Image (cartoon, rainbow, N blue to C red; front, side):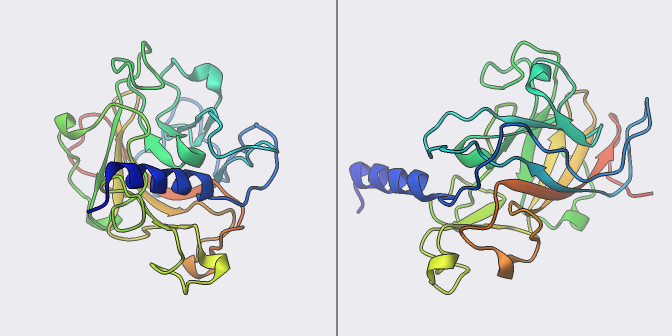
Length: 246
């Protein structure tokens, strides 16, 4: 049996090696590639695709640096600045180890980045294909903290049901070569994230990739630019019972 000391040692190695090849850059979040939203309207019941939401980590970043979270508004289809943290103008946070863990916006939870704000959001993950998630889950199933959904138990250093597999030695999904070590393989099927937005609406999300401009898992390598998040989602207005695309 592995002792707790060995597990901590492995976790340290994981943190030091996860996404070890960094692209230098500034701290400004890049605008994702989406169509603009009309004033006063949210894009309900439409399939929305977001490409390359994120930023290159600052030059000289270390794995244990306390990097600030980044925020995304599902209703506005755009990045939200940190100044909006205690508002209901964002719905999804990306934080923790290289910003690969997701959370919602909930002002009542002291462990949430939106603590003491008006947000009434939450997040959960289902072991289902995106198209199979029709019924909106009950509100009491949503979790209100931050950094809740990330690594899956099917990979190294999993933390429950997650949206990606961390392939530490490159042998879970890769061929064991150097380029395939320390790669994060997003589940493009059999995982769907569901969010209650800060304003009480709902969204289901299919994650596609954390590597910039790369959607094919065969092209993902340890030095591919990251973390840049690509995903699809559908919004449903508060009070809805089902997700629909019209």
